[in-house]
Length: 238
Image (cartoon, rainbow, N blue to C red; front, side, top):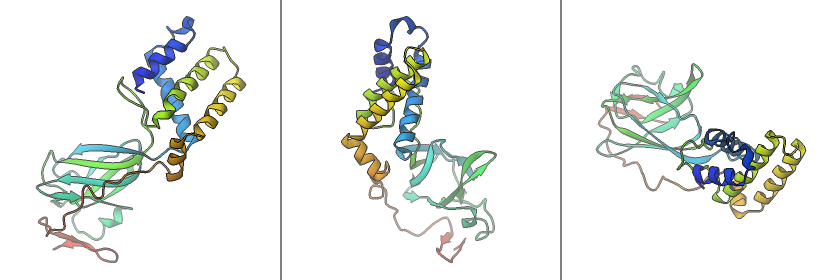
């Protein structure tokens, strides 16, 4: 169900006297609140997501998506397939190489927090602007914001999102008690646990699919003039 579908059903089922208060903005906030609670309840914190960004010549640090949890695959195309490998920390670059600002075709990266925000640092830096990098990763289910957005949760859960929204709305409006809303929550969670999609999701930790076979690294000589040797090796000019 899309954001618009959920809001339409929610507002249609809600007590009519309070429709003016529960407008689209408050209803959207309620959708995202219920979405987060379900993700916490079922530890659905590794949904499949994709993020794209464009290169800036000579720039080393790029934004990390706010929902990012775990890396899967990073790819760009500059006349041939290229893969950027993600490593644990800055030691992959700082120490093995003399000049971290070297320009070329990036092949290594690490994530680090700077001023409270994580950054993706690449080596070498791009030697051209506007190269699109595609990043597949597992992340926290993002918020819905516009009408065509769908919650990143199993489609079979979506009707229950409306039911839980109604329980939250009635508790907020003092139509039912807190204990009654908790009973509705527990009943709904127990029902969702019986669904096949929930069993599959929780058994694999929210991970499925593979991009490795779709975007293999073509092993050809590196024109950027550097080599990578792991473990125990170094990144150094060829």
